[in-house]
Length: 262
Image 1 (cartoon, helix red, strand yellow):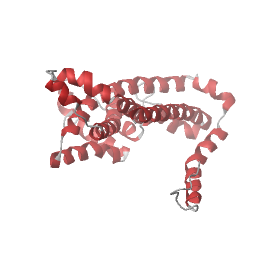
Image 2 (image 1 turned 180 degrees about the vertical axis):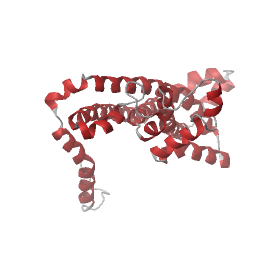
Image 3 (image 1 turned 30 degrees about the vertical axis):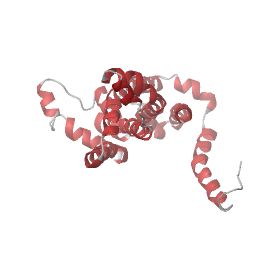
């Protein structure tokens, strides 16, 4: 409903409609162009099944890593103030704004076979670049900042004395974390995890640069879409439908998380 009291000028509606069309028309166009009758057949093909398998496997592992590492980092960041806090937040935010290809180059320059850390790992018989492990590392690198920043912002905006009261009553830091802090930030954790999973699922540039596109090993859904768009556009559209469905699911989860947090 358009509220009259304190409402913006009505000409704002023109810009709002144009903005909505700019965001929704491409989705509508893709849905109209979708080969609906062939979608089940395409998604059951060997190419699609392999890409879906690689994506689901790597995204699951990447999301778990993001939570296990990102939650402690967010809690630590929420306690920092001053210059040190600003530097750490900048470092965490950088992967969010880096072009994906640059992120892939950064990973390759560090973990490539003859690079900074990769050379040392190669001496131990461990090669990371252009493997499934590289896919997971690329996804974690670009996705974890979304979880950390959203969770850290929630912790900073919802500071309370509950943790101090728990400590005053003799509770250990670990007990306070699991029985006070984590329950309070659960809505933000759910929505942040969903955002990280979605970013992992849609990752393309860093994965292609650092892990390549090997069918059944490193070729995720976005890479399969990129390769199929020239040779088989209908397959590309059907795979894109999977990502669109998952995007809608993530948006619904994050929206519910924000409502609960409020």
